[in-house]
Amino acid sequence: MDALWAQGWRHFGTAFFRYAVAFHNGSLFSVLPLRLNLNRFTPSRSQKRVLARNRDLAVVIRDSSIDETKEDLFRRHRERFTFNVPDSLYDFLSVRPATVPCRNQEVCVYDGSRLLAISFMDIGSRATSGVYAMFDPQEANRSLGIFLILQSVRYARELGCHYYYPGYAYREPSVYDYKKKFSGLEYLDWGKGWQPYSRQVDRDEFAFDFNTRK
Image (cartoon, rainbow, N blue to C red):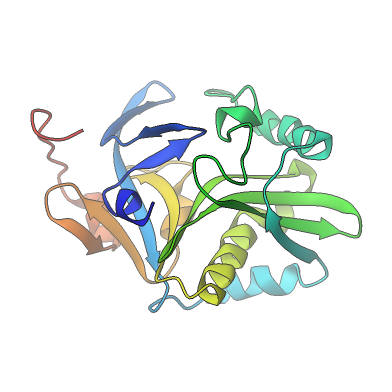
């Protein structure tokens, strides 16, 4: 898994994929595979505020599973979307999510006994990779998407990992821009390998050879 992630591969369920361009809401976007260099990451002021805002919540990390509580949270979470609306958690996870196609653990966020948010994270030898995350839309003011990434980073460091992969974003402005706001961020240049990310990357002209890359 470490080798696949380093080459830009991801998976949903047992289907592996990588791509450099994507159609999103009717427009063509250029894809940026991202990863956090955990040795270079430090939380920003705003991220520290997110941690402080949610210090009343409990975080539980365990082997992944799917049950009715998580399916109910998924149904409420997907109401946020108006296009590319997923049908099921099984669009992203296998029927044995803890072990297939690799080890996977869930980062669960609770307010008492109520599940507010969850992120499913693959576990490798030197890296971890987020597969899918969701949260209760009624708790949007808590910035739980950012909170889940921060908790995933903390856990990856505890495991002794070097990298955390938050998934793809786009060069162009999109709903995935929150992934670009972490220090220690790197992106995969399909021709040159992993490079430090800066906002200049988004302004650079995007060139892609469809005959040699996927």
